[in-house]
Structures are given as structure tokens and as C-alpha cells.
View (spheres, rainbow, N blue to C red):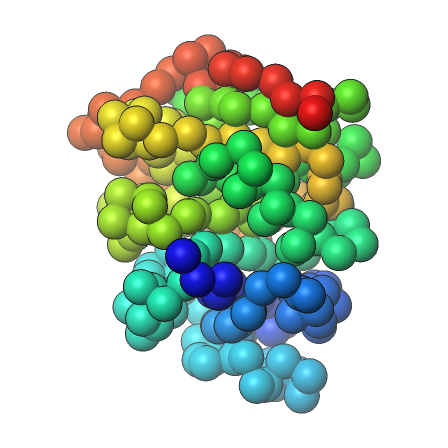
Length: 246
């Protein structure tokens, strides 16, 4: 297996973001060869410090996961061990990427995410009237947990073993709502594991999830998406299979 990581993401040009620091932090790995491919979404200019990793500028409206599909389609995925999908509004702990991928590898997660810090916004997701609770918030005392839920953002990783299972993203739900209730079925059926890394939580408090798009339309797309695909209920998904303290 190689030691290359592909980072793909979309950042907003017309709203506050941490994209410059994110690009710098993710590129500062001592263990992984990192390639970053980003789309700038908006009408403003592409920041000079991000220009070398910005492969496209798109004028809204445009949806996140079709844009990520374009980035993935243009990359040779067989050259990467991991793909990390990342948003532009998070803050990493020190040496994040190396520490995070060390843990993902150690616990053998094909699909994973870092936990969120205690001061992050709670996940915003509604399924058939169910409002999401902070299941992905860091659990003190744990290093990681095998779960039946990995959230669609603000950052998650996919190991090479699961590329064909997860990619391309299903554009029937272009903002990704509902993926995280379908993914557990797909991962379990393939005999793989998924989970959350509590040892390296990320802060997500710049913008509330979904603040800049239409919730009603996205929720309707999600309900239709889930109606046609095998998926877990929230009670089934928000479940810890195994906890790791060492």
C-alpha cells in the first residue's frame, strides 16, 4: 500500500472561511504524500495562497457532492491509500493528519471521521422529524470508537478498500444528506469497519451546518433518496459497536 492521500473539498469565496490555514495544516504531513484539489465556490477572487490547489472556480448555485465527484473523476484514485473530503470551516489540532490517519489505520476503519470538539456546533440533520443529536462530539476518555455512523461533513476519510463502495457520490442527494444512513449498510455488507476518532477532535464553529443553502429542498431530496435505498434509522445508526481506550 502506498502512503499518498488525496484531499478534496469545496471552499466559499464570498463567506468567511479557514481555507488558507486548512490547506497549510493538511499539507504539513511528515508521513504522507498529500495532494490537495479544491473548488472555489463564489464570485470573489481565489486567494493567492490557495491558487496552487484550486482546480476550478464555480459560480453558485452548485452542490457540494457533484463538485467533489468532478474532483475525484479527474484524479487517479488507484494512486492513493486515502481520500479525505474536507470543508473550509474547521480548525485542526496540532499534527492532525498524521495523528488522525495513524488512528484510522490502527483501528482499521475503511470509513471514518474525527470527533468534534465540545464547543462545536451540534450536527444538524433531520430524518422523518428526527433532529440529530451530538453523537459525533468527542467522548472524553476514548481514543476511538467503531460506530454505525460517519457524518458527511465537515471532514471524513475513505480508505482505498472502500473507494468503489463510496465513490462516485450518489447525486440523487447532491448535498449529501442521507448518505450517512446508507453508508453503514454498504460498509457492513462489505465486511468493513467504520468509526470516529476521538483522540484528534476538530473544531467546527465558524458556520452552522447548512447555513447557506435551502433546508426544505435539501430535506425533501434526502427523504426521497432514503426512500429508495436500504438505510439505518437514526436509532440504529447512532450506536457504538466498540470503544477503544488503548
